[in-house]
Length: 305
Image (cartoon, rainbow, N blue to C red):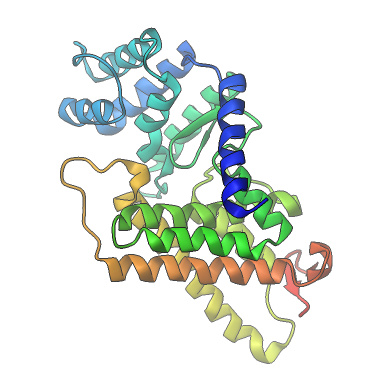
């Protein structure tokens, strides 16, 4: 089966799995948690109006305060048979959930935790890029995970080629695709090696765990050099993640989205490509991942190439 046929089959399988497994309504407890968190975060009627309209919420603007408005719009999404209520929910919470918490704004991490716990109690989970799915499924990155686990470099190269081909027409979408590949790489790597997933599952925190597990070159002469390279890779991840947050297609464009020049987007996509191939080459340097990356005395891994 060629690459195009595999993608078509995967798309059909994902659609069927989504229809069969994912509930169609937003649970009331999730509505309550999301309305409270999102209303407090934005605390602006005009911002909330734009957010819900761009997310596909049906009907006119509901009456009431910010929290009442959010809850009413989510319930209305449940009641409208023409609306995919969980898709609306995912779009509404996407920008909030995908942002990096900071020490100066601890309420962001607390709000993200509250929403994740509410979803989990209803057997749902939030995945990057605004996807709400049944817990235990990974619809957004399932095919990528297969490529990554198998060390299928050709298919990963094809994914990056597709992102590069989008640069001239839609650099925002190219940034989103590159960031999603990095995130899929990190989560698949963590799953393979049994690493604990952080509470904040956005691109920065998951990369830091992978970077720590990769370890350093055993040659002391080269160790400091590799430290500098890995620090540069961390900057790439942070930069690509920040680009996606601010201008990526996954976060909604709004009326006046920030603009990025094609050469800037190309640099970010190519940097993401270098990072992904670097990790894959370490990971698949031997037939078994356990032979390519061995634990050091400090608990991290070191490359034995």
